[in-house]
Length: 144
Image 1 (tube, one colour):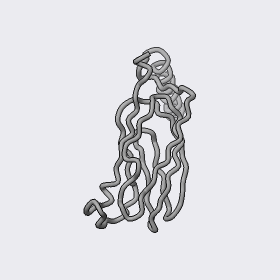
Image 2 (cartoon, rainbow, N blue to C red):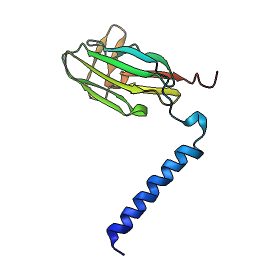
Image 3 (spheres, rainbow, N blue to C red):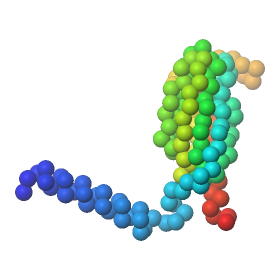
Image 4 (tube, rainbow, N blue to C red):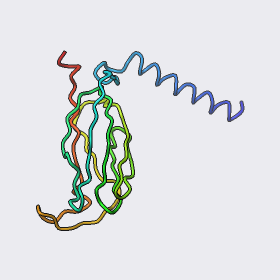
């Protein structure tokens, strides 16, 4: 048998297995949901503060989240939310937008994904590594 035919058969089996798992075996609380609710959030990389505001965001599982991210600095930042596959560069003095669906409940970090230095602020010395926030996704499906 041709090696390409074998590879094609294996790929079909893997895809079919994933589809069957998702359709019949995935626990109900783990299935992705979309509620139709749209949440608009503005995140600001504060000028010379090495922080995002707000640092904590609360949303519900299934919400479609539209983020407007503003970079007030004269140098680049980035924003990444690993759990939702987001990695967006924020050029100096610019605004970027992106969206995602909060398919899973839990607490997820967002952070600056572009090394951006360090400096002294009113609250003390801060660095690129201090640019971290939390998105708390509540599972309202369990409470209904």
